[in-house]
Image (cartoon, rainbow, N blue to C red):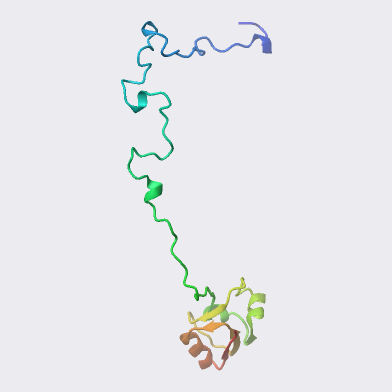
Length: 150
C-alpha cells in the first residue's frame, strides 16, 4: 500500500473485476452448445425478444380493457353549490353571484345553486341560477326572496 494516494495509483479492489463469460465459444468453455438458453423453443432462438405486454397469444390486457369512457348527458350542468349554513355567516342583505364571489362562497364561473343544508334566520335577497325547494322554503320563511338568473 503506497503511503500517499494519487489518482494514478488508484486500482479496483482485488477480485472485484471479473471478465464476463463469453458464451457459445465451444463446449470446453462452460458456455458452449446451448449457451445457457436451454434446449429449443422460442427462448432459445436468436431475436427471442417479444414485445412488451405479449401474453403468449392470449388477448392482451390492454386490448381487453373497455375502449370508451362513457358519455356526459348533453344538457347536464355542474353547479357550484352554496349551502344555507355558509350563507348564514353573511350579514342580511341582497346578494348576487358577484357578491358571493367577493365573500368567497363562490370560486368558479360555474352556475350557482343554493342547497338547503343548515338553516337561515336572516333576511336574504338572492339572485342565483338555481335553488332547491328546501332552500327556497327556508329563505322565504326567514322573510327573504330568491330570484333565478339565466
